[in-house]
Length: 176
View 1 (cartoon, helix red, strand yellow):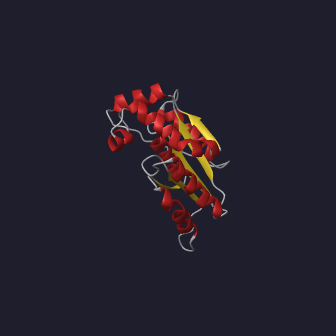
View 2: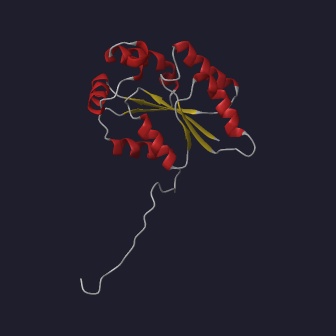
């Protein structure tokens, strides 16, 4: 089984990455609490439910501290199941700009009542164990949504597979 943890800063493009992974055949689950991660792995390996490609999103909505993040990764390591981590990052100015453009609020500004600058710094601290173990790190600061999608598909699309199918329909009118 190909088990992938998608993580990174809020506003760095995790949702777009997960959509791209879904399009190339991954079974994707968003917003996984840390304690549920080993159970998701067990479910994915069960008889009838056996899934070959699973991606889960873990971010500050389900992780509240560095210790909780480390415990979740240690629980996965105990199962001796190989996994990869995709970490999506962007610089602080880009994240602030993206939140301003979309008029959305950073998840930690709501739950903890702090400024976006403090929220980004705290989020970086909480996610540091995941970034340290990440096999793939993509800085999306200078990437458009389409470029982010292309980069993710390029990393996880098996050789010889095509991420897009094309249908050509031809028709004509007799008099123009």
